[in-house]
Length: 61
Image (cartoon, rainbow, N blue to C red; front, top):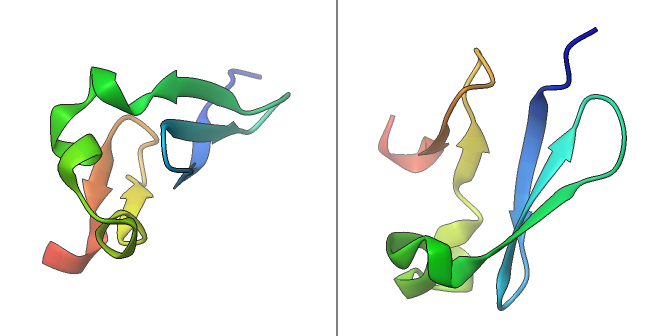
């Protein structure tokens, strides 16, 4: 089975992708200026697309 992202969450400096198989993958927020500039409340609205290929702001849909 292919590993896919199933959820996204953040702490103050990192983005975490929860994977279907295995541990979460961690990325520094400074790699993603839009997400780094977002408030913690704004980041709560981000989700993984149904095809598991994108992170998007669910609030805007």
